[in-house]
Amino acid sequence: MDFAVVESTGLRMLMEVKRSDASVSGALAHFAKKLRPAEAVQLVETAARAETAGGIRVCPAAEWLDSLDA
Image (tube, rainbow, N blue to C red; front, side):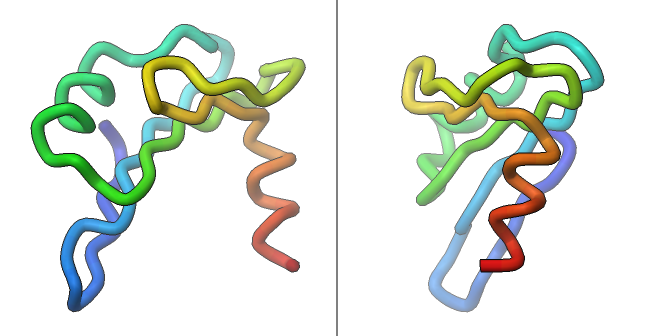
C-alpha cells in the first residue's frame, strides 16, 4: 500500500500504484479488509480498462488522474 488518505471523519482511501501489475496487491487487499476505508484503488500505468475485484477498484492511472479535473 502506497498511500492512505485520512480526513477528519476517518480513513477515506487506500491506494496502491503499479507500473504494470493489474492483479490486486496482497497488501492492499489485506489492509482494505482490515481497515475498511471508504474507497480502495489500485492505479496501474498500463491497465487497459477499469475493473473492480474484491471491492478494490483497479484502473488505468491516467484515467483516474483525469477524473480529478472533474
